[in-house]
Image (tube, rainbow, N blue to C red; front, side, top):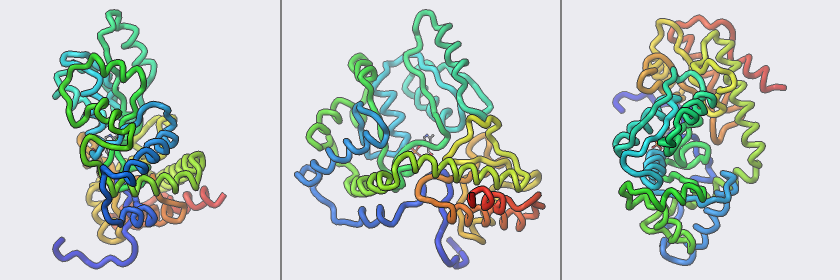
Length: 343
Ligand SMILES: Cc1ncc(COP(=O)(O)O)c(C=O)c1O
């Protein structure tokens, strides 16, 4: 970048993914490649798949693709459906709309439950659609549970580059009759190869070194502790927003995300200008609003490898940024977050 001023200290990555990569994960990946058709790799792959099933709490097949999250969507579609099949999609936000695009590209008939993106999927609206579907034309329900999910670059604290499908027995049964074309994504080819720790094509070997270390870290902390840490840090973020006198984009408390908070920019302040001031002055990357909420909101990612102190640093940086762009803060949101976290 031209004329970029030198910023001392750590770069704070607080977009809703990719997230911070722990040093231990970076070190684990910093290794010479091994033969992906050799014994060391196959033992590692079997171990990783078994361990990852425990992390995502499934006993079903788990598939690891050398892909980003978008590939994992495409795979779920290509493996279970046939051209002309009807699918129901709940429009929870930007990424659910992209999934609709993928489904349409595959010539599926897409029935959309629209929403203003400001709350999660309402189960009663889904139920209504399914009850109305007397002829059982709807073959699949596609849902984004949280507007930041996707691949390895989120809660697994890895670089982007691997993405996952879990495959229930029912999904595997659908696979048998699905006629959409697939090769790279083909579940059976993967499942057969994975049995012996192999892949039908070259896997992302070094990312898998990292994945094994990331899972060790998650298990050392304990999954329940990981989840409660995320809830605490998300609550603290929301306290800060309230303190600043700003509005959270999500207007339904039960749908608040513990991984990302989207916030309306103060009246008259361009959120992308605010983000660039915060980046250039304080070395913090925040997320932008995507598609229809671009220019209206900014997003704070608070998932992955972070603690109270790193979050307070980020909130402090945002607070300074808000002042710099001329916003008169109601009261210190950072202090509100500290008060919450200190107890
Ligand atoms: C909910 C959700 N779905 C899908 C994606 C797309 O994933 P990727 O960018 O890894 O292809 C993302 C990425 O942020 C996401 O948050």
